[in-house]
Amino acid sequence: MKIKTIPVCLLFTLAMLLMDGFTGTALARGNSGQSTFDTYFEKKSLRIDFALSGDVASQTAALQQLREEPLWGGPQRNLIDSSGYGGYYVNVYDKATQKLIYSRGFNTLFEEWRTTEQAKTEIQSWTNSVSIPYPRQEVVVEITGRDRKDMQFRTLLKTAISPASIFIDRGRLKDNKITRIQYTGEPSGKADLVFLAEGYTAAEQDKFEADARRFTELLFATPPYDTRRSDFNVWAVGLISEESGTDVSGKGIFRQTALNSGYYTFGLDRYLTTPDMKSIRDAVWNVACDAIFILVNAETYGGGGMYNFYAMGTADNERTAGVFVHELGHSFAGLADEYFTSEVAYDADFYPLDAEPWEPNITTLVDFGSKWADLLPAGTPVPTPLEDAYTDKVGVFEGGGYLAKGIYRPKVHCTMRDYAPFCPVCSRAIQRMIDFLSDK
Image 1 (cartoon, rainbow, N blue to C red):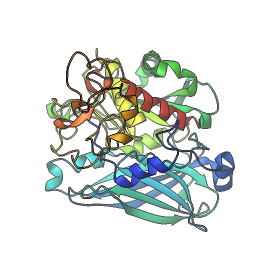
Image 2 (image 1 turned 180 degrees about the vertical axis):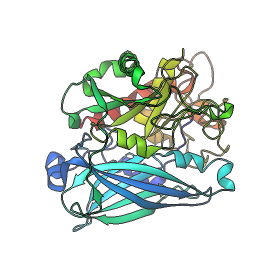
Image 3 (image 1 turned 90 degrees about the horizontal axis):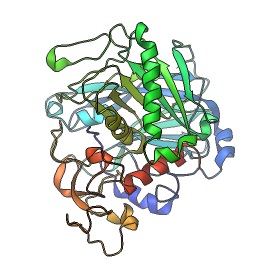
Image 4 (image 1 turned 135 degrees about the vertical axis):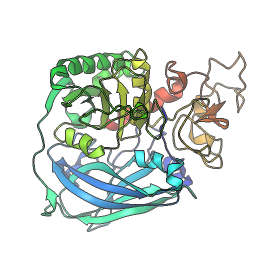
């Protein structure tokens, strides 16, 4: 399914060359490791809910709510994300010294909406949410977003936050049933995957747990996850919906569900998402969470995924396994779609051809050296022709990112195009994300 993203600017291309980022074994490592975390943060989370508002031409951000939550399951060594992944960044600065002490990139569904026809005539506002490690002293939190006109990040929100502020909500939320599917160690040293139940009634909670266990086994039967099982914890959070299934708005079907999901996102029948990020974050307030997959109790084909935000898919379609790993490729590892013939809900210039996309598995050849040039067999022509001598090897094949011309992918077939096995480029990106989240 389509994941809307914005190409990386030259600033981050340069950053990747200068820092131990995605060209190495992890996105980035904090210079002082654990000692840096203990100096600046406590082992709990500060959740920041904010609104993104705007249209196709511009966007703004506004703070909505701050919440203290009891767990921080993210990295404690890899605090600075220098990958350049995502259309937005959260940056945290120590207020006293102005030192950058935490950062992470992400995408949003609002970012995708801004490229639709609707955004040309309407202004909308969408709630979004990020979590950061809980600061010990006053910090400055900045939310930045890419400007499509020049691909540079612009500050959308910047505010000082005191950890002792009376305006931080410290109340408990609903204690949903949390099932430990797999536990291999302390969350800060593992990639914590959380399955959320959507469209499962109280009588269907056993089905949800069985589905979550089945999806766990699907994941770890899929290379390269099959060799990295010990680097994951897996949890299932049993949200109870009033009705089974999900909305199918294009057919006039609406269900009362925990996360307000539905097909026909942006008018596309198979695009299954929810704009209700607040309900998602409320559901995972007391569980370690690096990646979220929302399991929808439905049979119809569909799904969606946004980098470092969430992924979603149906539990019972015959293509469930392929959709699951494809959508998780978007949300977990920042992988782009490699197909270019399917219907999408976005403008044709989704990826400007005069800039290099930030996703690791597509290129416009503007800066191919920062992508998978090191994985090309000797003598491989760039671009690579669709000839028998090259079709089973890593190359630079035209077609990807929803465009048949001007964007290139690493292999003829891949999970991110047509549910074939992950290509070496995508596999490497997944491995590096696992390393980053497990503090390696």
